[in-house]
Image (cartoon, rainbow, N blue to C red; front, side, top):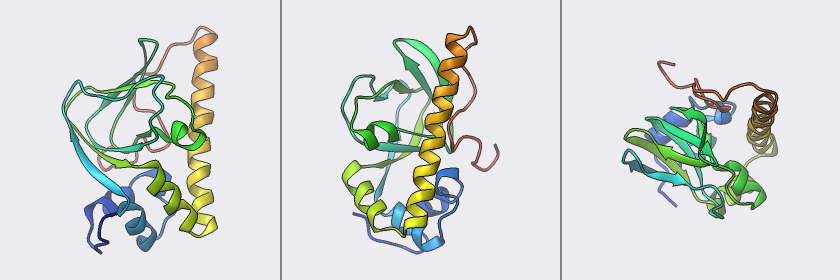
Length: 167
């Protein structure tokens, strides 16, 4: 786990992500301390549909495409997060996420994140889980719309989408 620093840029960034927006400064620093900053090249597959990996990611900079069975579902940008569903319910990944340009992401391991959530005050953990649940609801709504003849989105999606500076 990283050393906690009061001016950790990871904590400053997380303050702009809706999933963590209700957290205090100290809570953001605790959350940030469990993350690793990763620079990603364009074209790199970050998660692959069907894999059983358990990490969770927040996009700091850049964009990624989301596909299911090769079909474009969405484009994720700064402030978006992904990987939380497989982390929480220990199921295989439901989509493939690929960097469409060079990116910077925060990576959270499942074990460290679960330990962190268990140590947070209950209201903070509930807010975070509520954000993840809202994301699942949005995914369900998109799936129903697509099955009813709608089209997949091409703009950023997710609870954290559109919450970064400049969005």
